[in-house]
Every structure is written in C-alpha cells, then in structure tokens.
Amino acid sequence: MDDVLEIAGKRFKSRLMLGSGKYRTADEMREALEASGTEIVTVAIRRLNFDEPRTLLDEIDWSRYTILPNTAGCYTAEEAIRVARLGREVTGSDWVKLEVIGDQKYLLPDMEGTLQAARQLVKENFAVLPYITDDPILARKLQEIGTVTVMPLGSPIGSGQGIPHFERIRVIIEQARVPVVVDAGLGAPSDASLALEIGADAVLVNTAIAKAAKPALMAEAFKLGVEAGRKAFLAGRIPKLAYAEASSPLTGVVR
Image (cartoon, rainbow, N blue to C red; front, side, top):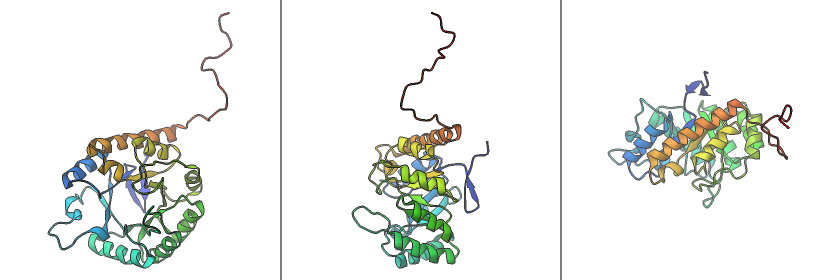
C-alpha cells in the first residue's frame, strides 16, 4: 500500500515529526531521531546562537532529515515574519513552522497574529505549516490563505496532557484540504495513536521524547504508536454502541 504523507509536494513515509529542543545532550537527540524513524525535524531559529562555533543545526544530518525552521518564541506577526525570513536564509528552505504565541503561561497561539503572518509569508512563497488552536474556523481560513498544513494543538505545549478534547480536531480533519498535524501537548505514544486513529495525518512531538528518562526508547514507542494509529484508521474501527453485542451468533446454538 502506497500510504505516504505528502506536504507541499514532498512525500514522507514517517508520520511522526520531531522537535529538536530540550534534549540533555546532542547525542540523546540524534539517538532519538534515529529510533523514531522521523524524516522531518523542527528547529527553533530564534534560539540558535550563531556566535557559537557549532549550533543545533550542525548536530543534525541534513542529508537524512528535512529541516523545518520554526518561529518559536515569537509573540507578534512582525517578529514571526522576520524570524521566518532568517530561517530561510540560514537553512535555504522555504518551509516554516509558523508560531505566533499569544501568552507566556499557556503558550497558546495568537489567532489574529497567525493569520496576519501566514498571509504575508504565503505571499513570499513560503510553505507555511501553522501552529493553531483547535479552531475549525481558523483552520479553514488558513487553508484559504494557502498554508500547506494546519497544526492544531492537542493541549498546551510541553504539558503532556495529550488530547483531552478531540472533537474539534475531528471537525478540522473532516473539513481539511491539507494535511492535519496534531502538534503540542502529547505525552505518551497512546496520545499519538489516538490522533492518527481519528484521522490526523501526522503528529509533532518534542517534550514527551526529549524529557523521557530514555529518549530513544520513547521515540521508538511513539513511532509504533503512530503506526498503530494509522493502521487502525485505515482499517476502520467499529462503531461505539450503547449496549452489548454478542461476539458469537445466537442462531444454531446447542440447547
């Protein structure tokens, strides 16, 4: 079965994207990337220190992974646009994971700022992958602007809460004309599996892997969770019933 993830004309076998922050060492990060089977790795451009002899970008094998610059840490559309341009200059990539944050405590996306930045970046021929709230209307507007994905949060960044309320994400998936990537808040492989089971095209995970006691082992677990969830979605789950239904037929039984 030719079941691949396609974003902006690029095709990927893995449906698990990984972040590159919060790892204790560069070796742990590389081992986790390897174990996860990921093909897309996000890098926060604003948090790179170009005064150092080596940056995070030097620790990642560019020949193996698609680098996805992101605008993490930006609180205005103008700031995010500037960082996106810097990311293109540094990486040579037109891809950008757009983040415009609205508050410092919960790190929720600023919807107005995200729309504003997305409009400008699409005009500048960026392939925009926006981080958003689980708002179906916002997701629709971003697709109309021309973003190549929508990336609704499962729960607040780094919270590990998983996807406590996924009905709005299900609506986003139902209406989507571009891949839906559940991003932020996933804490365990079962969260990733649920996202894929309800029809999400991929997930992006960072903290749950980077902060695990054994990041590489957790990365492998997420890989399996994503694969299981995708297969369950393709197989088609049974409907939920309000009553029991016997597994064995009632006709022809011995009396």
